[in-house]
Image 1: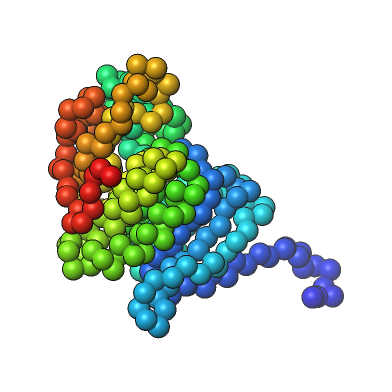
Image 2: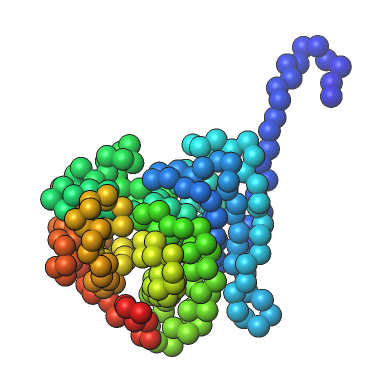
Length: 269
């Protein structure tokens, strides 16, 4: 306060951030292709307990007053906020998609250039998050097409167990990604949880997804009569978060990219 009328008073606003010691973060929210829905967002951290196992601990449970823009990739968690964060798990629909490889939204013949139109930019939604979270410094886990809420929640719990099971079976730099894909393959075998097949993951130089046919999204009666088959788990190599060479799946043909086998995780029931 001042009694000097010559001084002009300006309101000040300070934002204090405290770094959480966790190395995993879980965003639980109803989502869209590019941003998260403001009214239903929460942020949780996976922190080690005394036993060394991971557990969920809610830290932020409300998003009141946040705008849709504020929940986008470059604002909700900035690069400076990530620090030593190893994994950001976006337990919501669509936001990590890259070119709709399973043709849920597009026809198989649609070019890659058309497949980013729904994000409102020339980038796929997953590319927006990849760029907004350190370009691969933080591993991204989530979905490339809508997922039933119960399936996603169960997959998170299975993922925690898969981190332990696969720790000695896969390369350390692939553990987070393959544990997430494995958890969703396990969940997808349950009745009503087939949407877990839309799980995907990103790291510095790869995009991982589960290839299947026919699509889950396109309302084509001819396709819907065919039994759904899992074609495999595939890694798409990335250069600066992109791959313009590998094309979307063609019916029951093996997709492009590197096929990956996850120890102890079957593709079919």
